[in-house]
Length: 443
Image (cartoon, helix red, strand yellow):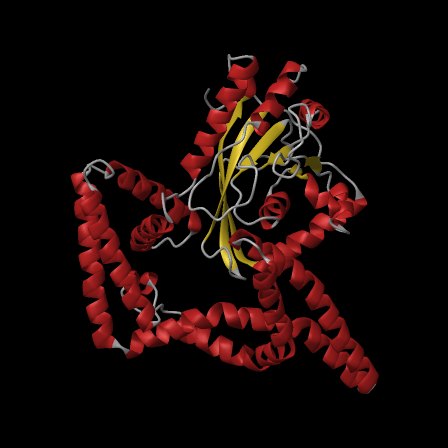
């Protein structure tokens, strides 16, 4: 069960005006929702086919939209059947070739044969060279690690092979976010190794078990996990500090180091809990001091304020009038989706989905209202200028909101020399403790 050396099935990308228009639109929406989308690992080719993609699931509908719009190849998602009951969403899901599947939690009367027809459809789809996306945990969640992985994805692949499909492949896609509940956060799509289904020698239930274990291990090996949220936070912060020392602030670099830190944490479980607790406490104390000063670790790791900070300040000041108009015009619709999401969402993992959904509804209506008022109340030339401001100023506001936190931190760094020196000493002590621990573990 190793990476395939056999060429995968190749197909043409699925076409369709409606499907293409929807994906074009949602690529732009996702590009606004996230500040940056990184892709790393074994990225599939545009003409990849016959592949079942599996991913972790922490952000409800955001996760499939992200993968479907950012992946270079055409993919159809499998979704819980209850989504098809939502007005408007049924049409959208059908337009993107989504496949409904009934979960036992949604229908307690569901028997073992309840999804046989769906499994046959997906098996034929895979055998015919199409790609499928499934979230094998079976539900979106807010845990700091993978939850129980269901066997459905493996059974789909096993059915496709039993029905004569060849050249089928399996690939894990890990989703990592720096602040997954926050608008304009960063995200990482990390593709794992490609697994050739024909390389598995098992048959029947044994094949399902082997495929399930393989996809669970592949996903787990790609993610930075923790047994609890405090443990996961400590791992993430140590990884961030180590990554900042390399000068590479990408999520891909953080993820790579984070998995090494996670391995070290596992090595400490037998007799090293006191050491782990000491490291976590030191890291937490250091980050609390960082937060009190309004700084981030990358600044202290760099040793000085970024050389371009003065130029950035000048650029932002030039942008300020236009950004201020955008903030003033869109302050209310900017806040409404967040307030609505927090009131409606039953679980933390649903917040991002409701924020995106509310934003897609509120922003166009609000912008249309502003444009209507401009046309109705202003002279022709002023109305045209007002419409341009209404349409473009929110993007200036986004640029301002994205960049001003870094600028404020740079100014604080320049103005607080004595306290910064103390913080650097504290950081040095933490890094010394981290390196001593890694050395003791032979890492």
